[in-house]
Amino acid sequence: MTFDRRLRAYSIDSSLAFTLMVVCMIAIYNISSISSTWKLTIAMGCYFSVMLIPNLISPGQTFGKRIQKLKVVYRTAELVPEKYVVPRVYLLLLRELVKALFTFMTFGVYIFVAGIISSGREDGRTIHDFIFKTRVIALTRYTSDGIGLTTTSSAANSLKGTTYHD
Image 1 (cartoon, rainbow, N blue to C red):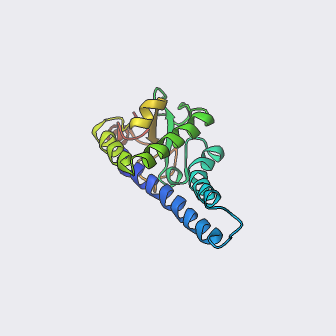
Image 2: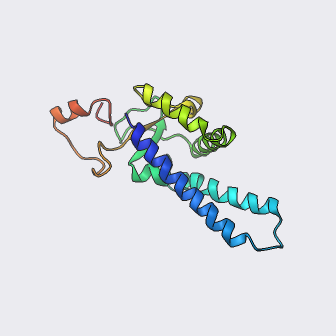
Image 3: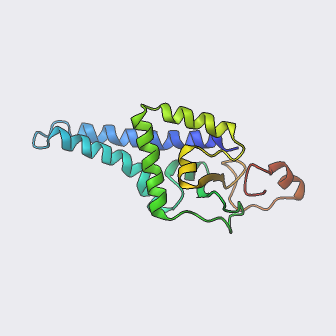
């Protein structure tokens, strides 16, 4: 359903996070008054800030999800944009933390496994979606589409199962 878009969104987010981490590490590398532990803490803080802060600004969307026009909603939510329910911010933050921790603890294998699970399911849910009772929906058919466009019945039929036109 949205696996390729989810993968692109995650790639955008992780690229931004690692770029910010590298820039931060270069900036603080030669500062001798900061211990190695604090340098690592600052670098990890940069990574997690890219994954968490966007959910405070636009709940259910990281930068990558916003670019790919995806949103995290409750599993039982309707797919019509006016009716879907975004989980509470603390659940979204915890969801992102768990996803990042699973990724770090398995050295990236979790993302591979989550991709296999997501691509094999009609609803595209992954392990962290099951834990937090969420799913990711596509707000538009294509990333270049505007959000909230009306469609004919035949177009809605062809979009069935891929967007909020279900």
